[in-house]
Image 1 (cartoon, rainbow, N blue to C red):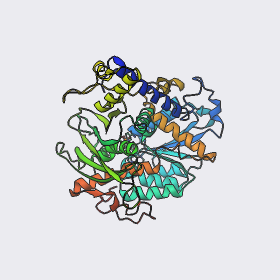
Image 2: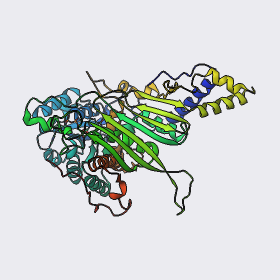
Image 3: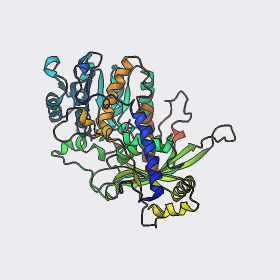
Image 4: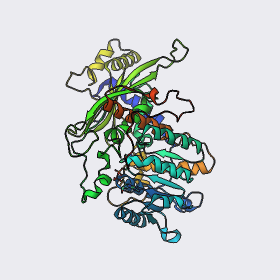
Length: 500
Ligand SMILES: NC(=O)c1ccc[n+]([C@@H]2O[C@H](COP(=O)([O-])OP(=O)(O)OC[C@H]3O[C@@H](n4cnc5c(N)ncnc54)[C@H](O)[C@@H]3O)[C@@H](O)[C@H]2O)c1
């Protein structure tokens, strides 16, 4: 990300600030309904959340890296009653039961002691467990989530939603059948105020029509975890083996495909790409670099095709994830006809306007000020004009109001590292959605990372894996011949057979 959003002095710069400012107001308006975390006083009366109707009794299945983050984030959410953890590794279970005892906001000793189980089904047997957070390796998501739904539990399921296309379809069908249960997927960007702002800017026309998206998740590391005992290799390094994981696509691209889906308002129509184990021949069979093109058919607003339906424009997401060079890290670049938005979960977002948009703004300002020829002057005064091919134009940071991001002000801070805001917002929203569901409210708006979002984030990544393996273009229609048909019967041809 570049500099703080000053475009030099001049009238053009004033107008750009005004534009961002007006967007700020709009988003602030939207955000007021988001959550009580930001509107309640900093010293909240926790007794409110001890009332039975506010409590949510949670269990955590898989408390490794991500499960641990989700657990610690949820411990700070008022009304979270963490009653159990399940993990096949004893050390993980003990560590997180201890954390619950030390860090929970709820007075455990007066109510219960958290339990731990090696077998997740024992958690599902417990009548008092109302909801589960599933953060196990990818291949376990669907079986565990489906068992949990069948046991009547609300589910927070990590991304990528399910390990095969067929499992994504089956899971989606089950979630839709269990209309009284909340099912949220771990696409926490949907709860990020920053990404919500980016979406709002796009909707407000800040970058014109989206013409293409580029995204990458690059790092310079082998992505192999230290393993003390070879017996544990596939438990610890499950990401490296296709019998357990979709690899870089489901681990990384799924987040960014989700962002692209959200920004253009649909899912990819077809996918092609290349990838391979080109660098780290250490026994892994998931690619260490992937270069993928996702093609979206985006309806052109207000257009009519020959059959009376909308006409579509093809918009491509060009995606790379490589483990040999970290330049650019993880971010998304959304390129529109009037500007570009660059977003990164940990690094903010920046808006770069196209020359054509700046010229129009400058001309409008000059006309308003009654200064003939003033447009040229304003453009000269602004710094963002006609970059050379090597020099990026200056952008403006997309601002998110400080008081809304610094959620930790409103809860008891944990010692040591804790998660950034959007994970807290996502788990907090999960609890809110459960409460709203219990109260009989319509939760469609609250449930931002729904099963449909999960399916549309996961399936294109699995299509990409097929495309790379079979060296062909893979089409959404192969798996969803009729989007709205009774579904499920589609044979997921070309998919890997599940491993363990
Ligand atoms: N949303 C995000 O930003 C984000 C970030 C990281 C990981 N993830 C996702 O979270 C999931 C977990 O990733 P991770 O990095 O925490 O992996 P991890 O290996 O660190 O943790 C997985 C845990 O599951 C446990 N486990 C394995 N098999 C089990 C079983 N049968 N029953 C119970 N527990 C079992 C393991 O012992 C381990 O503790 C993955 O799906 C990953 O894609 C999401």
